Image (cartoon, rainbow, N blue to C red):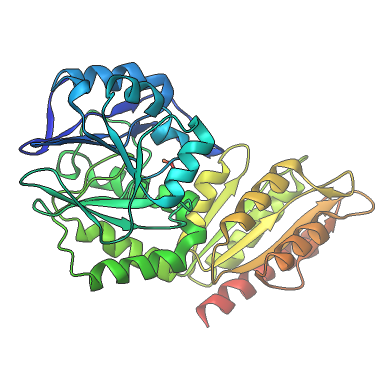
Length: 394
Ligand code: FEO
């Protein structure tokens, strides 16, 4: 491995997962990385580990720098298995290491891997001296698990916030100034939309808390993807905007179709939206996926969802999408619904009920068409698009 240095004595020892395409339901089209950092001082600390299938690669990366037996501390910022499942392997080599984690991290480590570890729980503000360097810990409960914690290297002003500010992006580059900025921000946005979106109020509060603590940040080294070293304020600003719900005059139409009727309706609705000068994204599920849809929805003001009726209910792709979307709780959007049916209907009713139950703002009435939309039906669809576009502009 080429040595990747964040600062003298602070090295990236993580691994690149080039081929992962499904990260618990999130479509990771560009793979991911599991970042771990080795801080070598009078005392040595390993910050986080990697997914279990890469444990030997992590071990080799550490061995290129030092004997793992000399690791004094393993910092576990987060117990989700992509970061902790190599812990039992590493702990076997780092026989004398103490695990540093939050109290809930300690509980979760025992629940995942048993109690055969030396664990020292820490709270916000507690520090660990490694020699000339100091690690300070900031608990970040529910960002995005109860155990989540940030580690801050005081002298170097490096924040290691685990999942926060990450991206699922496999690459040979490790730093933001080495990679295409558009790709980086696109993946950071996708990551936020598909993992952190429901935690927006907590993120806003945590950013304020860190700012109030007066912690200067020269670098942000997350546990996935690229390290922000050229201008970390850029991703902090993006998180502030996303968590505040900053959006554009944009409508996302998400739909699927059986025999083309719902597709015709979607296109007519898109024309109605566009007639008001509002931006539009048209995503047919089975061509696009729910990860892409949520990324587009993050900064849109309205979502219009269409489904044909199948077995008196919505089409399976829409059921999956709406389960995912209602769980991620996008805020301050207008939701409209449309669809086609053969005899009894049910898709539009089912989708509308699901959105209401989730507390979404629903635009009513939606449009339902029997069998194949005629000119009058397509006019109603155009008008639905017009009305929703006018509503978000107002
Ligand atoms: Fe990357 Fe919550 O694990």
